[in-house]
Amino acid sequence: MTTTPAGAADLRTQVAIIGAGPAGMLLSHLLAAGGVESVVVESRSAEYVASRIRAGILEQSTVDLMRSAGLGDRLGREGHEHRGIYLQWPQERHHLDFVDLTGRSVFVYGQTEVQKDLVAARTAAGQEDHYEITDTALHDLGTDRPSVTFTDSSGAARRVTADVVVGCDGSFGPSRSSVPAPVRQTWEKTYPYSWLGILADVAPSTDELIYAWHPDGFAMHSMRSATVSRLYLQVPNGTDPQTWSDDRIWESLATRLGHGQDGWQLTPGPITEKSVLPMRSNVSTPMRHGRLFLAGDAAHIVPPTGAKGLNLAVADVGLLAPALVDLLRRNDSRLADAYSETALRRVWRCTHFSWWMTTMLHTSGDEFDQQLQLSQLRWVTSSEAGATGLAENYAGLPIGF
Ligand code: FAS
Ligand code: PHB
Image (cartoon, rainbow, N blue to C red; front, side, top):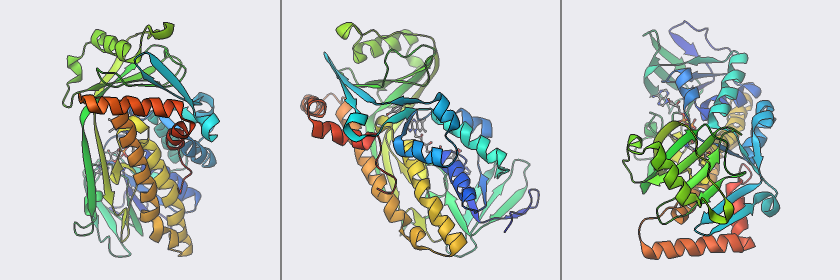
């Protein structure tokens, strides 16, 4: 079966993928490896999608999957393997060694780099994709000939008819709401704080990530390379990043991360990007309806404290790709029929872990909560059972958990 050549008003393929973020592009790559063709449609430009500063940590399962899919070369050269993280609060800093605790590690390798690798692989494979589309709409999802219509970048009306449609269009795309309301169930929690994130052209002041609890609010020291640091500060919802001067940002980071504690110093540097990320948990079920499947942020959103957003999108696709290959190449629907239930087990595990890390580390001004948070931090950093629980979730459970 071949995809109708580009240029025809109507296209025909096996899987129509909405969204060219990591979920959509990785799915297209894995389907092709299984002999299944796809067309990817995306509302933004390729440059915009590639430039979005988002996740920074790949858990072991993501690294393993990228390597097995032939996407691990640059990751192996430019990614930085981390054994664990530091948990910090005033006068205390403790390292949790995930490798000692669970045998699994994590990699610092930005989502922008993952996206570059995916786009390079799909381009080399001659993948058909349509960027800067508008008017995306899904049709006939309950039949065996679902389709996606859109207006392409030239203004032409197009239709992709497929065997399956996969919504990889994030939390604001049309796919999740294409699951009929009587069938759809949504859980939503909005947190009373946001993250002010910066990129800075300065070498990281730490070898591994520092997650810091402080009465003034949470702070985190992450990184992108040996010369670029990524740091975050808890700020009130609705904060305008431009109201935070560079000096104010570095002073707050120094205070909250423990500058001067046991001789540790936070080295400031030129800030090259500043943005505010609201924090919410959201799960939309089911992740399949008829010939529509959902993967990634289209089905779930987690606060970034657990470094799970991108990794959960990858885990969904790691389950969905073999399910669709079985369905479309072998007419075996067992994995596809089980996809939503299987994927949601991990979605809820990661949703809980992200909520747990977020509520443990972010201050809300409530004195009782602060005592509970400090008690939890002392337990997790002194009990092997507590530390292993965090490590198991952070470094990632095997796909299909
Ligand atoms: P994406 O949102 O990446 O991709 C969806 C794509 O669908 C987008 O390109 C969008 O343009 C497209 N689309 C939407 N509507 C469409 C339509 N109608 N037609 C066609 N295309 C459409 N996760 C972490 O783990 N750590 C972090 O630090 C972190 N920081 C984040 C910061 C921000 C600002 C955001 C928004 C998210 C962050 N995340 C983070 C989560 C993020 O990494 C996501 O989990 C990840 O991008 C999920 O990938 P996708 O499911 O592919 O969704
Ligand atoms: C990042 O480096 O952007 C990052 C790392 C860990 C998180 C969230 C974001 O939990």
